[in-house]
Structures are given as C-alpha cells and as structure tokens.
Amino acid sequence: MSEIDVDRPNPARIYDYLLGGSHSFAVDRRFAEEMVRVDPIVRPAARANREFLRRAVRAVQGLGIRQFLDLGAGLPTMGNVHEIAQREDPGARVLYVDNDPVAVAHSRNIIEREHISHVSAEQADARDVDAVLDLARRDLDLSQPVAVLMVALLHFVPDDDHPVDLVERYRDAVVPGSALALTHVTRDGQGEHVTEVYEAYRSRATSRLVDRSRDQVAELLAGWEPLDPGISWAPSWRPDGPAGPFAGEPSASGIYAAVGVRPA
Ligand SMILES: C[S@@+](CC[C@H](N)C(=O)[O-])C[C@H]1O[C@@H](n2cnc3c(N)ncnc32)[C@H](O)[C@@H]1O
Image (cartoon, rainbow, N blue to C red; front, side, top):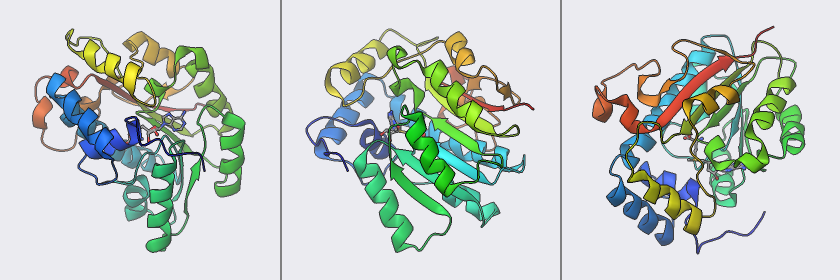
C-alpha cells in the first residue's frame, strides 16, 4: 500500500468527516470546518451526494443489476453500497476501489470483521483502467451487467487525464444493460464564494477539485442512455424522502447527478 499522507487534507477523509464519520485526521477536520465556514452548503451537499448514491443503487437494482464496481468508493461510512445492495439482494457483489490506502484499509477491516460475503476492497487508481478491470474480472462477472459507480469521483480527474475517454473505456468493458451512476461538482449557478473552496483544494489538499458544467457532464455520459430525469441536481434525482435543506433550491447543492444505461 502506498504512503498515507497525514499532512495534507485528503478528499476521502474530508468527505467522511462531513458525513459524520470517524476516519479523519486533524488536518482533514480543520480543512473541512474551514470549507464549511466559507460555504455552509458543503456539509448538506455531501449528504445529498451520499443520498443520491443510495437511490442510484436501488434504481439499478430495479433494472436487475446485481454487481457494483464502486470507483472512488471512499471510507466506509453510513450507507455503504454493499449494505444498500445486499439488503435487497444478499447475493449482490461489490468491488470497492479507491486510491486512498486509509479508505481501503477501513473497508477491508469491516469486510473481514463482519464476515461480509461477495464484497472486496482494492487500492487502485480509477485512471488505471487496465489494472481496475483486472480486479473486476477477478471479483465480478463481466459477462453480466455491472453498475459502474463514479459518485463524486470524476471531479478529482483533471482534463489532462481525459475523463471522457476514461468513462468510455469502462463503458466498453461492460455488457449492454450495465449502468453508470455519477455525480459531479459544478460552478453552474453557484456564487463567487465557491472559488475559495476550489482554490483551497488546489493549493492544499492531496487532490484538486475540478468543477464541470452541465454540458461537460453530458459529455461524460456520452454513450449511456440517461434514466429519467436525466442530468439533475443531486437532491432532485428521484427524491424519495423529505426535501431537506435543498427544498425549492436543489441547484444550491452544486452537484449534478445522473444514471445512464449502456444500450445494446
Ligand atoms: C468524495 S469521496 C466519494 C465517496 C463515495 N463515492 C460517495 O460518493 O459517497 C471521493 C473518493 O474518490 C477517491 N478518489 C479520488 N481520485 C481517485 C482515483 N483517481 N482513483 C480512485 N479513487 C479516487 C478519493 O480517495 C475518495 O475516497
């Protein structure tokens, strides 16, 4: 496993802290609190992202999908993919992939401690598609549909790493009927103050944060047929509970969400 960087705030641990998890270091917590002071929407937006993940997992299960390739899976906190999926389908398979060693170690710990079947966690860079697909071939059955989850991942993939091609390579590796679920931060409709958040990530965190417009998110989804309601603000993608802090103003989340299916 690669070195753990405890001197710089790390996205997996910042997000875990924002969700109320307990796997962060002081440097992550200080950074997260600073971001919350700059933009108080950061915390409810993290929750809205996580809630979308739950609804997306349920939606693709409704299509008959029983396997999940969770890229940028993050730290195991509330509402992990295997918990959601296996509640409905105890045989559901999940491969968690993250490039953060802390996230992977905690996931493995839970899997072993709780004797969870059909679930594995691997450290890999989602941009190294060949390596990830080797793992997926080992742990999943790529002759059957797979849900590829890129939830809050692609905004950590800069343009230089060609995120459109990246998504396309995963699409080509899965059979028709497979699905892609993604969320992505945007500055569309956001105030100028969010610049400070992006700048803080760029200058201090282990990964910078890259916002993309709705059109750019649509490019990422090329070749996937979006399920209704298409690209939406995360809180508005098939909501199934009280509207919460984004009632009437889902754009304030600053997060686009979509689920697409690979057509035949
Ligand atoms: C904000 S968290 C999202 C966690 C989870 N997907 C969710 O939405 O609830 C983003 C995760 O992506 C991971 N990540 C960032 N860049 C990555 C890459 N190139 N390969 C694999 N994981 C990556 C981070 O370590 C972090 O755990």
